[in-house]
Length: 632
Ligand SMILES: Nc1ncnc2c1ncn2[C@@H]1O[C@H](COP(=O)(O)OP(=O)(O)OP(=O)(O)O)[C@@H](O)[C@H]1O
Ligand SMILES: [Zn+2]
Image (cartoon, rainbow, N blue to C red; front, side, top):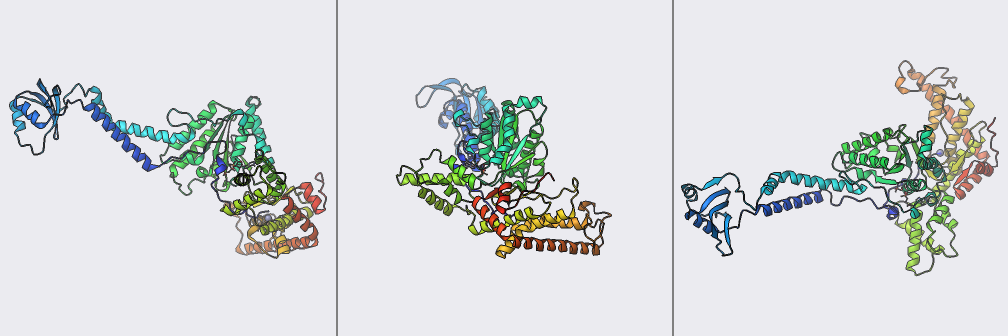
């Protein structure tokens, strides 16, 4: 089953912004903030000095001295070298441009007069308060005393605005706005291809959003959240938008990384607003992209925004979702390409309790996606999209959209009237060369994967009494490729020993096929072996299926409850030995059956390389076997 998919990296995808405005980033970060604070501060000071400039005209110190000597000064206020004051009688300004009673002057540092004794001799009032002048009114004084607060408030306003901006709303006033979509341009399921099963899973959500009353009447609780999990570019965002489009409800979109800002508490409050607004206009969809940036297991590595902020934001999302009564009509869709690192708290019932795998498309899916993206592109007669689909295994929807765009650019540059097949192939070459990761799985790997999966499938079909094979695929799915075997549920069924052996043989089928056909062992069988080990350990240590270990619990089901059940070291040795014996026997059997049925194995692998996915009936037909009758 489980060849790990080649690691996929996030790449910057220019086509990502289709439809929705790209997330706005805070320009400048801290430097910008400090700069603005400075500007605000200076502006405030300027304002104050303007308002405070009413201390009368500034006069030369000599003029002031003259008035003092004349005994014409009634009161002054001094601070440092600046003196403000009021005359008893109006006096002409030295430059002759009118009269003045109030004035400001600056005492030169070198002034060598007996100013203070002279002033007191003349009974001039020296006040501790600035002289209240008509120019500097009550307002100015108020401003002076409030200046520090004012600066802080302005700064806060600024931060709030910035933090609020990416959502189209903010901490202050402005509400988060849904992405407006014109009715004609709505994204629908017709714009999504190659992931039909996923569309099916989302269909009842569309239904619910269209008609929440009907569900409410039945007392039905809808899932509050659906987690879309899959590699980048497989259309998760597109799907979320299509669900909103199909249901005709407002679509709120946010990227989790936008919540994480430097200031603790802002993310949580933005989440609160987002949900409040969505509830107000419900039914509605909230889409949270990159949920893994805040939804990683708590206590994990600290991100840029710091721990607390990430945790608070996540907690706020969880709280909001817990608050869903289930019939409000707000559905949260979240996307991640790292479902494996998510905090289990996220997937608890009532939260993101539905996880939908979004995989890269298979060959038929790729052709359908190419059709969608060439709808508005004039195509030449010779274009064969099926052929392009065949040449692009491993590419995602986003890769294919990019491919079509490149081909169109090429055709335009060559001044053609339509895009030709050779444009498409040239674009493919260009896209492949420019890509950081290999877009298309190397042929060698595909062949090995095809045999690996065929091995699982064929042995699954050959084991008497085994579960029928439902689907074989070499399209990467999550971290694995292909057919899935489930572990036995000992609580619900009693499984006979032969069945368990069959399961082990099937699980070893991938490795055995690679061994038989290529004579190599790859890392692709890790999770197969985990499953084999789990089964064998249960058979020997828990279910009494080994004569040598006997009918006792040598290995408790739950290692936490080992007390009173821990076996002697000698017994554990025997368990290990018996596990090996069983697995070795099964491996022998797997290899033997594959050699005996080599033609069937080859046929399956060929069909997989050609079609990438085989359903139940196709798989049995290709292998020349009949589907077991399930009613037995
Ligand atoms: N299944 C698909 N059908 C049609 N177009 C697709 C499909 N998948 C992806 N695309 C195209 O690729 C674009 C990008 O896809 P989208 O942003 O939805 O991917 P994603 O899975 O959300 O990726 P990421 O993880 O990078 O956010 C879409 O706008 C669309 O043009
Ligand atoms: Zn496998």
